[in-house]
Image (cartoon, rainbow, N blue to C red; front, top):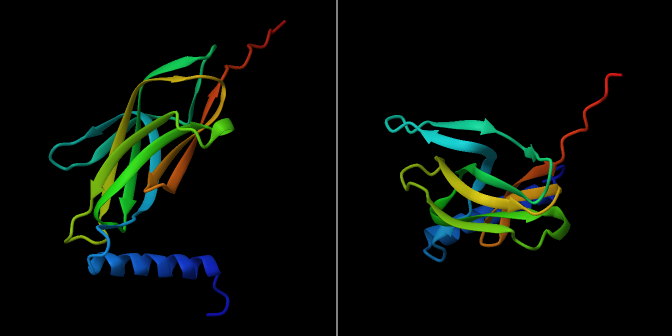
Length: 165
């Protein structure tokens, strides 16, 4: 097909192959697409409607000194297009040493068989993490070592106040 990017054809082919392997029983799951990764203070779920409220979303923190201890934060993620029980992990790394995990939280999501295009949400809670230094960090969702989606996070010092005189 002329005019199509090869990456799109390849990824569509890979997704089709993964679904066929799942249907044939070769694989226990199909890797989902991650549609969101949001950092916040808390996630509240309504018991009846199962709707979620994300409280105090943020992309970084201002702190006068490091190391800095963040008492609690949540990472909210949404997935679609998966099949079966899928292993998902949230990793946090400092961008200067990207390969080294500062935090790695394993988890698993299960897609309902009767809703192949359903959306499944997942919440990771991180308590008492200490950011060792200022700079850029990355939160990343992975499935069997394959990155699905990442989110940048900055730890910075507040700006010095300007003397009005």
